[in-house]
Structures are given as C-alpha cells and as structure tokens.
Length: 81
Image 1 (cartoon, rainbow, N blue to C red):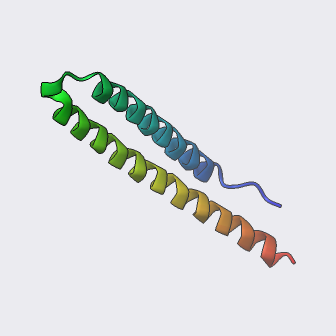
Image 2: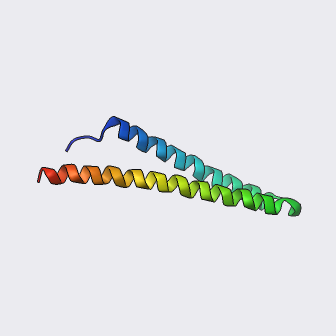
Image 3: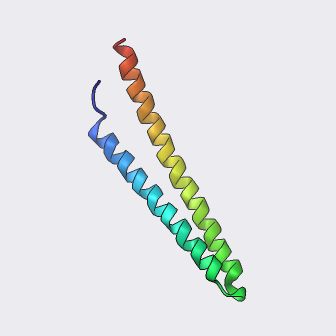
C-alpha cells in the first residue's frame, strides 16, 4: 500500500490541530460561562455557543478530510485487488 501524499498528511494534521484548538476554546468558554456574574451570564453563554459552533465547524472539516483520505486509500487498495 502506498503512503498518503505528504501534502494531504499536512492538511490532515492542520485540520486536527484546528479542531483541538476549537475544542479547547469550548472548555474555556464553558468555564467562563459557569463563573460569570449574573449580569454577564447571557454574554458568556453566547460566547460559549459561538465556541460550540466553531468547534462543530472545525470537527466537520477534519471529518470530511479524513473521509476523503480514507476513500482515496480504499480506492488505491481496491485498484490492486
């Protein structure tokens, strides 16, 4: 089996790091929301909600690239069968 293209591996790793950063921001935003004073809770919740949306976007981008890489690999293996 041939290895994946180095540029594809770089893209996969970059998307993974983007997802991990976004996931970390979700936890940070959640902590800020939990600790917010009553007058700031709505804004803290909006920040948390935005962080969740950004994490979802990042995870979808990573998942799509993983699926594309897996499909490409499967086609390479299938063509040799």
